[in-house]
Length: 138
Image 1 (cartoon, helix red, strand yellow):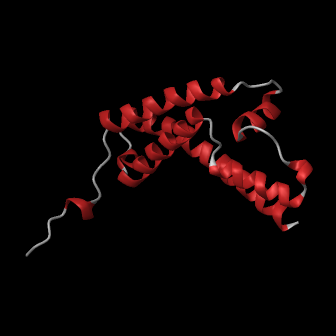
Image 2: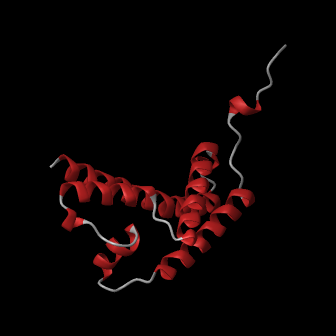
């Protein structure tokens, strides 16, 4: 029972992560256009960019996200019949839109999103954290 609950928690965490990456990109674009201060957050932007770079690296290397592997491991310990092959997005995405999704359909848009996020990071750079920009007095 605990393994199933933990696996469900990992799925929820995974959905939040995917949402953060996609919605975060849209918020950065809108914030750039509207002049929102939040998009200047160094840590938010750096975690966002690093996260998508890791995701696209895993996609093209053919490896699963560690959250996918953790979920599968937890489900296998609860009931081996509940595990699935492949990655998180194709598995749950297929369930949502009722089609078989080839991995390339995930990898190419993810790569394009990554390129856009990296370009935005440098075209609209975040503010440096104040503790990194302040000089220490001797």
